[in-house]
Length: 345
Image 1 (cartoon, rainbow, N blue to C red):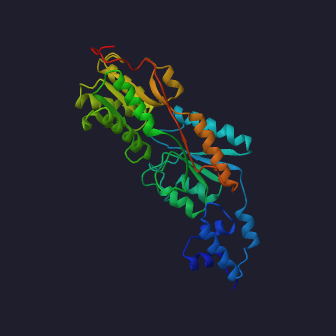
Image 2: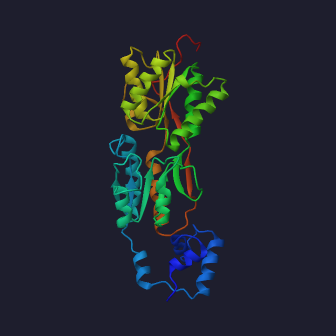
Image 3: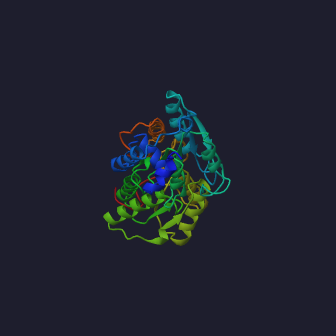
């Protein structure tokens, strides 16, 4: 019987997809593993099946984008701008986009989910994934099937995973520094969902800035949100119930910051006179709410372009110059933050 790729994988105790990449000279496989695979293939006189090789090389020239179904969705202004960056770059390279919004709350690659069907049917050449989680089953699922993928957000695990992101920790430190410079010390934080890596890094930035300024960390100033306007509203109400003396709040995205402003109004507080509010993302809508939103600005459109560029390089088996693309962020100061009342100017 002729030697198969599965035989090579079993003998070397590695996955079949790793054998396939090693034989193709894929730079994602370490030089040591490539040498072991190629040496064994020569020793056993392994020859790839021509028909199978042809199928493996078949391309659709379609890249998939997986965005959350709920509570966020494509209607979120952040995703609309991000998709614009992906689409504008992809079209220059002859690629189309397939949007997917799995209903499973955590996009689990199990059961008959939209995510699983897209991957299994090979309708796309690769995937851009959003909202990486601290434990994310999609990583191993895609690796086992040799599907190229790129994360929007640092998944915080294996260094070989490709991702694009803004500097979450530094961005939040800028926001807190700004509020402290205005005389605020009782600064609340509306965090994101606890299972997401972005939430962890933004909270890390919040805590680091408080430490630098000698402000004690207080759980009564923290509330969990879900990156939506209603979630920000509920979280702000919760904070005001537990710590009515807060004078400023950082919200982990702009939609929650808008929700926080609405909650403050409901409680009879004036923004920014009684409560300063700072968001995160820099969506266009932030400039048009009342008061206009002070925010940590990410290059959202550029993040989309960078994710598409990185994924298409992987699809075309080109070694990307950088597997991790981290963008610096800026602080856009508008009307929603002001000097604390009674503080000297």
